[in-house]
Length: 169
Image (cartoon, rainbow, N blue to C red):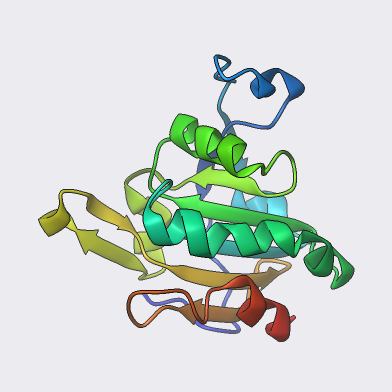
């Protein structure tokens, strides 16, 4: 299946570590919890996926503009902004703390790229020693229905970047 505009997103669950002030201590780990896509019923969600936390393009070019433009997303009625990667929830939490996400952007773990496989957007980086990863994409979801999906055709950030997504809201 390849997810397209107008379709309902498949049900899925993601692990993540909710931000708490205790996490400001670099030695705190937090406790992972589960988020279901069903939690997004009745909400406008911007979900963007990256191949990996702390990797050059994801860390420098993809995630930071979403943080910088947080207020613009909120002004356009976005309820939830989330970044998704195949990393475990502790790595995603650590990355979120380094990037300063706090409670603005959820850092979700798509373990084994399971959900991304369901929607047809994975990236095989086995030759680089990274295994199967989430592809680089962004989805605007409104009440569980896809309103926009931008899948990167190659390296770099274009159709899944914050600026591109903002123009589609």
